[in-house]
Image 1 (cartoon, rainbow, N blue to C red):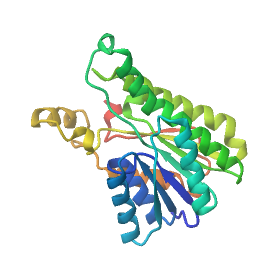
Image 2 (image 1 turned 180 degrees about the vertical axis):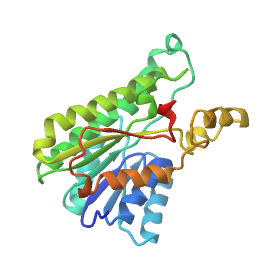
Image 3 (image 1 turned 135 degrees about the horizontal axis):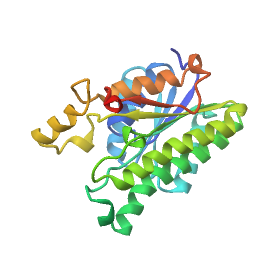
Length: 248
């Protein structure tokens, strides 16, 4: 697998899956634009890339803003001349509430980041890729892009919609050389899980036939792999990386 000469961007890349994707892109040879709203840890991701011998730059981006997504893509083009690869990873989990207990503000907050942000990112990325003959967009959905989960209504809705956006983009832009894929991680060791008590963690582990929670690097490696030219016929697919969660 090689991504030599490619220019990639990753949203939500300050920690967790996003950081792992940035490192995997760079390890495969891509130059990486790291973006997040956490500037300190975002720069730490850049430092990790450069310490490993890669090349990266940081750009602050709140993905719920269309204008900031446009600016992020412009930064990639101005810095490296083009955009070849993008991973729309930025997301946020909801407060655990039954569907009818979500107020308007919390619903809109989750949708704005997890769905609107992916659309705004894809729109800017597709426009840039059309100008240079194609590219690969990988959207981070979730196992909850296929099934429901108690207390996660807006998140489930958004992640299902991300799969739909992925398929729509594949249908409309495959002929232009743009591939769009969705990854469905199971529960992964990220900040979202850091406050779980032992009982809660054991409950999540039990949902995975693999008998464990996944690691961010396991998602990063898949994103980099499917972005390579060797996957050139894969388009519009939802790819679970879930320790067997969806096989239950």
